[in-house]
Image 1 (cartoon, rainbow, N blue to C red):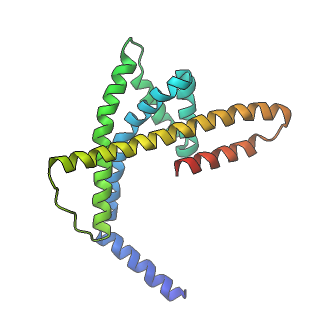
Image 2: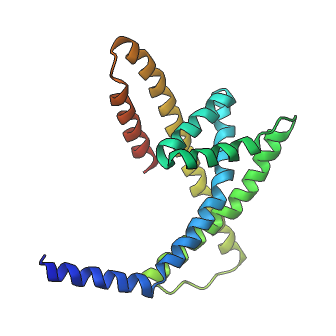
Image 3: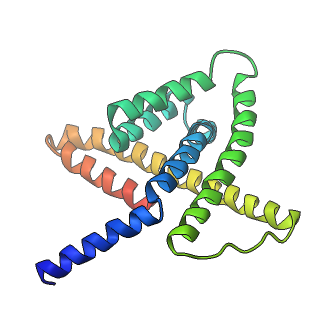
Amino acid sequence: MSPKQVWRLLKEAVQEWNRDKASRLAAALAYYTVFSLSPLLVLVLAIASLFFEQSAAREQIITQAQGLMGQEGAEFIQSALEGSSQPGSNSGLIATVISVVLLLVGASGVFAQLQDALNTIWNVEPRPEEGFMAIVRKRLLSFGMIVVIGFLLLVSLVVSALIAGFSQNLNQSLPGMETVVQVVNFMLSFAITT
């Protein structure tokens, strides 16, 4: 491509971005995603606690978050997880039930907004709603997709915990291999979640 063609393509992309109001669509999608994040983390922690001690599971989730989102993101995740599991007899169960409800609402919002954003960008007319059952089916599909994402996060958590244990043993035998293991851990986590 010549520089002139690259410039024309870039200019057209910016014009289409503005015409579709993509920044507004991205902001709405980010809002619904953040709204779904805390409940999803509480559910992942509840499931991970079945396999690991809760404090170890929480620590591993925070470590994963720090690797993906930096220190501030990890602190946000930590405060969300700590706020959901205050000491008390039924606090974990109550947090899980509330998380499921919020996750249903947030997940359906995420996927409805994603569908609306893609329809807007690709100039697709949305199909008229076919009734209550069609809406329920779409919302259940949204929740199912979130459950799958939660499962993938759990698998990533388990793999990272196994690699961390392997790394400690390997580092005693072969000093200096920790960086290699961290790179492998990142690549595996990235592959699992994408």
